[in-house]
Amino acid sequence: RIKNDTFIRSAIFYKFITQNVERRDQWKSFAIYLFMTNLYLINFSALRQGFSIALAVLAMMMVSKKKPILAIVILIIAALFHSSAIVMIPFVLLALIPLGNGKKYGIIISVISLLLFVSNTLVSDTFSRIVQSIPYIGSQYGIYYEDVQTAGSLGLGFALRLVMFIVLMYFIIVRFEELSFEHKLFVLLSCIDLCIIPFQVSLSGMMSRIEYYFLTFQVIAVPTVYTRIKDKTIRLGVSAIYSFYLLFGYYNFFFVTEWSATSYEHFHTIFDVIFK
Image 1 (tube, one colour):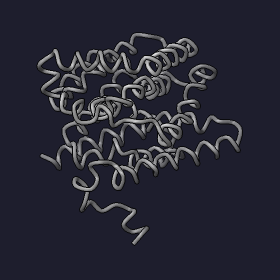
Image 2 (cartoon, rainbow, N blue to C red):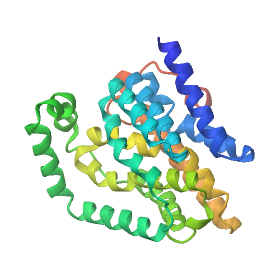
Image 3 (cartoon, one colour):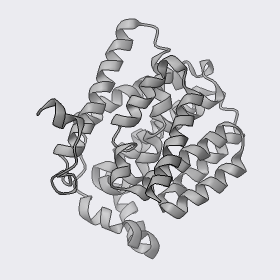
């Protein structure tokens, strides 16, 4: 079964990348897939959600082809593997929207993110009460809230990630019309993660489960906007910062986070070769 899941998941991401990224830039997408910890690596410890994320990607591919009914069916199947997939269902409506005015979407995402950062304590308390008051949610995800509600913080990783968000938001607000409908969709989905980051300050473990779905679309969004950055110096600078962000997160995943000492004690990575 694991082999079948792996084959299907790999086939979905291969199709996702080859259909939406120019051949010369596909290596960038595959590099992001391999080094972003919520994509390739998650399948070594969270098989169900890894497969669910792959199905969510397939569903959004159907949205990009204006097939919302099929997308909903795929997301329902994904939710059978991991219930967190239901968060993607509202975004199926994007199949019915022209996505013409990028400035509108950019302002909405920016304002919501800012308000969530400012009202983080209130939002976290409200979310906590929801988790505790609904038996199903509490039983499924309450452990994440109880274990890590004070563990989240904004540090170097957030600062590095913010650089790419600024680039993505610039393209949404200023140069959105240059993108195809498919690329507009995937860039927008990747920026939804900006609205989730404020929750991670006090709900890091729980919200990471939701964040994975949106971060995944950087596989397409980042190469799409990177190749359109006209200034060579800025393009190289963004590339260097984003590459460092991926490697920084990759290293932290295995050697710094609270679970690395036990869950991944015998997991061999490229760092074993580099620092041997």
